[in-house]
Image 1 (cartoon, rainbow, N blue to C red):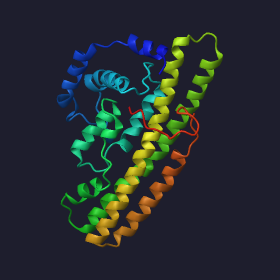
Image 2: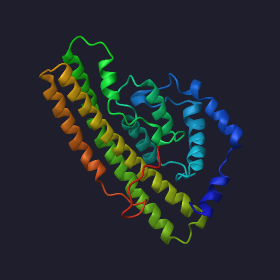
Image 3: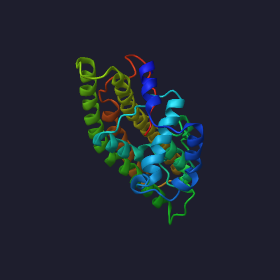
Image 4: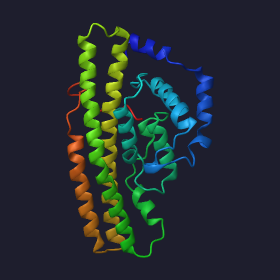
Length: 264
């Protein structure tokens, strides 16, 4: 980020290292038992005010793009819809769920998330089921739930990407836009594009996790239900393709690796 972006960041209200530490100290009591639909936090003082501010500070310290601009309705909705995909596929991964919560708010970097494809399998087999068919059915339900949510997220992301093009054209062409708003505008585009990359990265991880679980279930307890689960995984993969190939704004530069720098 340039000096002007640093200046914008410095103007954002912050209470220094002591306040930041205090926000993190609230974490244990603020994050537990506050999850709503799709694992998202219910609106609380923590989730609405403290966590976003702590995440902004943490992202800035890590050198990630961090815009002080308020979120648009579509940007807010896109972040809500991303939640399902960045959370662990297994509902029994309580610790990893909290890590993903913190990554979504930007308090922790994405690298803190687990990349162990066996996590879902272990969560699936750690629960008591009436028969092996129940495990296959649970996997099919999880995979199909992912698939049904990709379309709405993609439509939402396309609206955000379209408005980001308008945003940057206006920044570049309008003499009425103050110079100090240019870097925060670009930072927001990077944030939005990075969120799409992150979702695609975690979708790929989910697909690999589901395939790992299916293969190991077949080895341990073969069942005809494996065919249904395999078809569900193939359908999820087909649905994820258009999302992860959609044209974006090349906020990271043409020809560069698509890094995941923003979450939340």
